[in-house]
Every structure is written in C-alpha cells, then in structure tokens.
Image (tube, rainbow, N blue to C red; front, side):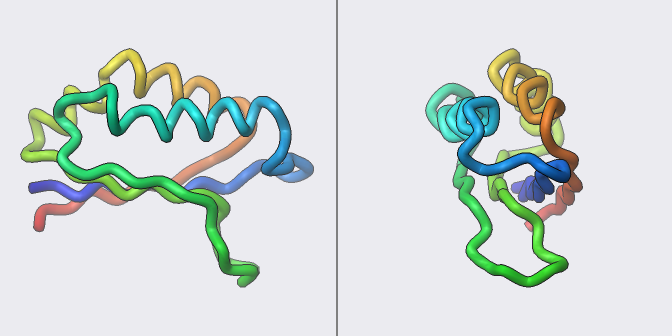
Length: 97
C-alpha cells in the first residue's frame, strides 16, 4: 500500500469561507466516492493555530504505484487540483506502508 499525504497552504489573503475555496474543498471531499483506486480517503481543515501549520490536509491510500498514477491522472482529481491551484500551494509525501 502507498500512503499519499497532501498539505495545503492558502495563499495570503485567501479565506476558508470564500466560494472558490468551498468549491475546492467539496471537489476533494467527493473524490473518495469517485475514484475506485482509493482504499482510504479523508480530508479536513487544520485545527491547530501554530504558525508553521498548513491549512488543509488530505490523507489517502492506494494499493500500489500504478494505482497512485491512475488516481493522480483521474479527471476528477485533476479538476480538483485545477481549483486549488487558484488559491493555494501544497506539499506532498508518498510512502509505502
């Protein structure tokens, strides 16, 4: 199995309640039910107020590298990425477990 983690940082001046952000969150929340290769899916807003904290996180799992590739290329994933690209940056980590 491969764990796929993503941490998002909203751009300066962007708020969680903006319509474009809400649309991005909904797009990612829906992925768990749209992409067969996902074995585990959760995403949520950060609850920590630490200055080093990111704003939003995705924690997911797929079977193998081929499944990860299919997930990353899936049209629903790409659509969500396009939304988030407008108002955030992110870092990722993928590891076997």
